[in-house]
Length: 477
Ligand SMILES: [Zn+2]
Image (cartoon, rainbow, N blue to C red; front, side, top):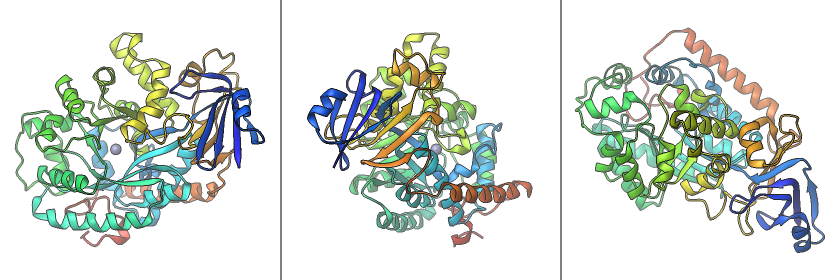
């Protein structure tokens, strides 16, 4: 059965905006896109859903998040990045698998109500998979890997294999499994290379936090700074020798041959023009997280240069522990204002570019542009409707301008993935929002109790003990 969705405005992304626009959906696919009379002529007898004063557009592609940390939002708002990450290490280990699942469910709920249809999520616990599958979201779940001490390499790989097998068994046709070596300061060069080979052999995508903070830059370049001291001590790595590599994090990783078209470099705040050329030459993509980077005091990634060099870029909201909310409108607006302000030039980024990066750009960065990111016949029916009837939008000449400068996540009316409505009329057909919110409040109370206990060092084993849910961690001592 065919359904026609109609709204005052339609943004196909790959074509100009359409007034009185419509999208016809049959099953999980888009079958027609255009003005209402055109679409009606193609699909006579279809059921009609009219959103009236709204914008129909492809769902957002959020290229970097950590759903499992949603209950951490707002906990360390004013800590410098190095301290912030150490604070997270302290509280992370206190939660059980079920509590991480509650936290991830809250994130999935927010994703749907804010118009995100595809999410590239980094997860250690794997609970993200359950939450995204239940919610009906599309995406890539990157399983996170840590390991600085090569003595534990085999153990780390065996653990990953086990988690991959479990993840493959849990996944849905809409969710792909990838690998996420956490960052150059938490993954040894040998492990990084091994994971790159493994990912290529198994045709898996890879995401990693790269060139995020000045602490990382100083650590890789000079072997010193907060990551060489406080952080290593916190992780139990202080006994291990480190050496200054004398190069930027991106040049450092390039030596190990990890970049390719399936690599998503998350952040890239500290990326010079030579680094950007490396990413371009290796066809790696970038997740730009402007709010997270600004809020944690890390800086501003060189988005205009990345775009000029033709690097694939999408927007990521990052972990709610860093940026609090999963609002892609806020992310677009922040990006536009930051880059215009810093460059002192309005021509560096405009509203249509922002919407493109948040949809098709993200899909390109994840290698999913043949399926999602724009409204075109044959593509998957991942679409949203945004209400523009409120006074803060009126009058509208340009829907791009209305959305980027005026909208926020509460203006989303409708979210549909693969033809299935997952958020409409303020409700979630698949999910029990009240229970999810109540559970996550309980999780938060536990986290706050942990903070109240003061900073406690919780272990020193390798390969991600610090993310491992408390009740199931065999290695925690
Ligand atoms: Zn992240």
